[in-house]
Structures are given as C-alpha cells and as structure tokens.
Amino acid sequence: MKVIAAYLLAVLGGNVSPSADDLNSILGLVGIEIDEDNLNLLLSQVKGKDITELIASGREKLDSVPSGGGGVAIAAPTAGGAAAPAEAKKKEKVEEKEESDDDMGFGLFD
Image 1 (tube, rainbow, N blue to C red):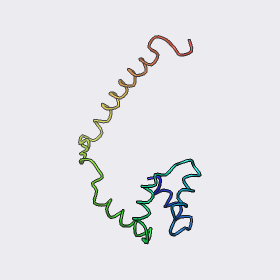
Image 2: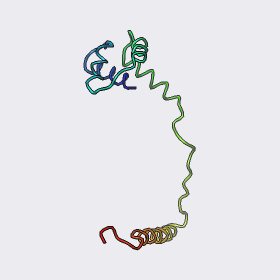
Image 3: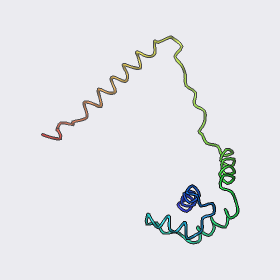
Image 4: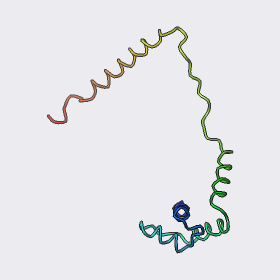
C-alpha cells in the first residue's frame, strides 16, 4: 500500500512513469524501507498504463463488491408524539444512574 501511495504521489507530482529509484527516494524521505519484490510487482503491473484508466478500472471492480450490512427497519411512532415523552423519561433515568456511579464514594481530588 505504501508503494502504491508513493507511486500516486510521483504521478501527481508530474512524473508520468516513476521508476524504482523515484519511489525509493519518496519513501526514503519518511524513513520507510521498500520490499523490492512488491516494488517490482507494482512497476511491472502498471508499466505502460495510464493512471486514470487504472483508477477507473479499480472503481468498476469496487462497485461489484457488497458494501453494507442488512437492511435496518426503523419503526416510526404512529401515535403522534406519545412515544417521545416515554423515551425521554427512560433516558433521564439511565443518565441518573450513570451520574451516581461516577465518584464511587471517593473523588479524584480528595
């Protein structure tokens, strides 16, 4: 992932076809050592390809990946606003319990 980020930074900086030395110098500036196998793999896969086409192709692949959980059904109160006061009372009771347990008999600055 770091190698890909360095490659994209080089391309954004105006270098259309970054070399291994370019990527080594970018990552070396922040003290990251590169695995030469990953570097060579990336460079071989992007050689002669346009970065915008690669990004577009990646987005198409991501579109086919499911990216959400199951549907959540939210029930709306049907009695107008009758459910809201009851919920507010429940929340107040919960908050009171939390506040009473905060100091547990001793204070931080006692």
